[in-house]
Length: 200
Image 1: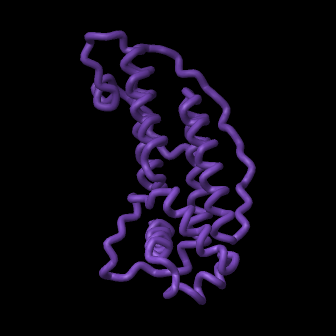
Image 2: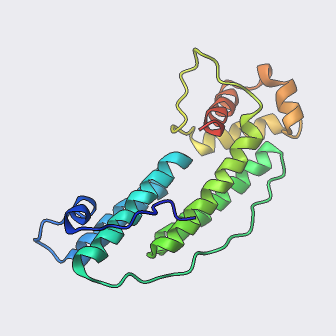
Image 3: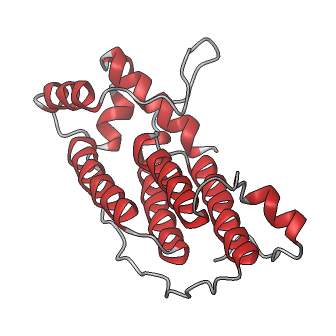
């Protein structure tokens, strides 16, 4: 679904969204700016509201470029993606998450059309949301926790802790809830972070 419904109506409005100093080819400027947006998606921790807001700005910038320089904007078909099937076991699902994230990041890096980019990022955020809903309901963030939703724990450290804990039992939701207080601090903090994300 297209979030930005309002089309650019004037040159002054377009210049607000596509800022060009006139010293280089506008097409080169556009490519540089698109690369900056894509770098954000690839390098930042996925937070749905932040990613979709940034995607809206990217779309508006590309629309402004085409408005200012009278280039016809190519119409690409939205892409479709099969749903991700999580197992409800944390170790397995964390690995699925990392594999699928890498796939989505590669697609973002390769794609240049904004309609296709929107399809990719929306499918990606849907997957993230599904994962957050599964594991974010296990442990609530406490008032004194210094946890920031957009700051991820190192995935290798998290994977190691998951491997260690899994030696005791498969990390199902029931196991995690029943043993929440005995979990390593790193795992508890991640569950609390996922709880925060699930509410955004």
